[in-house]
Image (cartoon, rainbow, N blue to C red; front, side):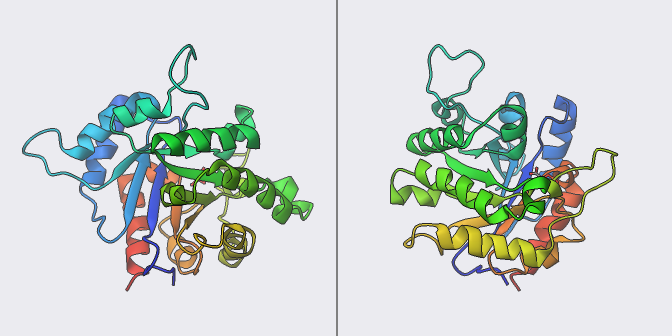
Length: 269
Ligand code: PGA
């Protein structure tokens, strides 16, 4: 069982570049009906929908109840405010009531040339501004095949750790282990399988947790991401060093996301 006594389980939903305004509204309303007690829940719509989703979850409508589901950006600028066309600065997210951001997702590393150096800078700026960060790392299929998983994770983790300038900022940090080969769909459209739970536990403990600063390593939440579904969540969350999930595809349906949240809640009993 995960170390629930010290680390509150966190379930993140990464909506990626999906959903219209109408669909995001529907999903956010669906999330309000879920039981999210005993765990932290964060969802991440596209930037354009952050305000919309956060207002629905907060229950802007007076007769509406407030949900404790939090909202995260999928990305944040490596720079501050000013002449940086197309960027959103950490302080601007906070000003809009958005307290979380994902940084270093493999899709940003692969398609938008986000290097370890950029990930590190983004983490430093986000933490200094006061954002909570879900920092992602994970090896590709080729790196795994070449037995380079440990090397790759250590390199990516070093950049993440170096991005944290003060020990107290680790309270704002969550790490997500997302093996790239387990994320999303195969090129032929078939669904991928998640990482075997024992292998994921090994990476989370032996390549990630033990390499975090000694004073904080037992308190930092490490999530697993990659093809998490209601049907496989229980086995993964049962592992001692998996403290929650970052969910892509299955977070786009309130029922599926709810099933994953429930598996996490059930693991606490
Ligand atoms: P997936 O995506 O759940 O669709 O595999 C996970 C992620 O990329 O965060």
